[in-house]
Image 1 (cartoon, one colour):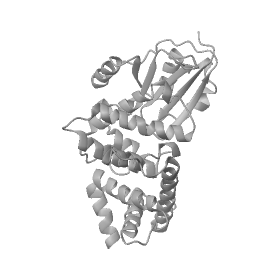
Image 2 (cartoon, rainbow, N blue to C red; image 1 turned 90 degrees about the vertical axis):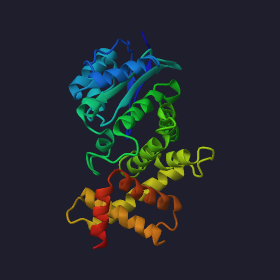
Image 3 (tube, rainbow, N blue to C red; image 1 turned 60 degrees about the horizontal axis):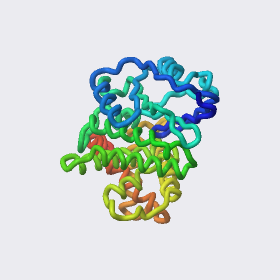
Image 4 (tube, helix red, strand yellow; image 1 turned 120 degrees about the vertical axis):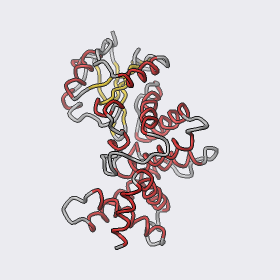
Length: 313
């Protein structure tokens, strides 16, 4: 019996904390994973006391959490789980410095490989299409996200302030990359995950997950220190998000800009950076806009080109 434990949900763009009063850690009774997910679950179990669980909707997730921890031990479960995440996330816990026996990685059923949903496309809200162009492939990027979550299973990733969360996210990305990268896929995987993080950092992620620029720098120049602080990176991504929002509103023909209008805003801002008329006082913001425009062109080259053609006309 655990007198006091803390359980944390960590995922791309969202971190929520569950406070347990006295949780007993029973095994969750998950719906049986499908073949590909089951193979990945078996591989992960070989690496530690980690369960990979698939849930189909809110009620199934709450049932599995109830089996594992007991909803009575979780503060405000309805409020906490009112909005389920779009991505894989990790449920961990500890008593003091001691980790609970099992770390659980949850995956929404709609983004498992068997669903034929490209997880990068889903996490980018399908703004750039549902079938993306990869340097590696969608299966490898899915595995990268799962092994990212595995790093969060370690006790040194159990919570912290925004700066620690920022470092934890970057470290989890790099840990997963090094686990999966080999001579054949290294450059391709690095290209895909850097582009993905730049896009999500600029458009969707909360502050602690704005790590796209530091990830890109580390992958490109692993022997050099990142030449800016976490605070500077988060501030630069917030600046870029504001710039994109303002430019998209000027372009938009309705109250809410469409994804194409947003892409057009990004391409226009990137052109302004190239011409030296934008972000003169914030070189990091300029670097982000260039990387962001390149990242969209990488994942959705035809869409990016069509928007650029509209802008040119």
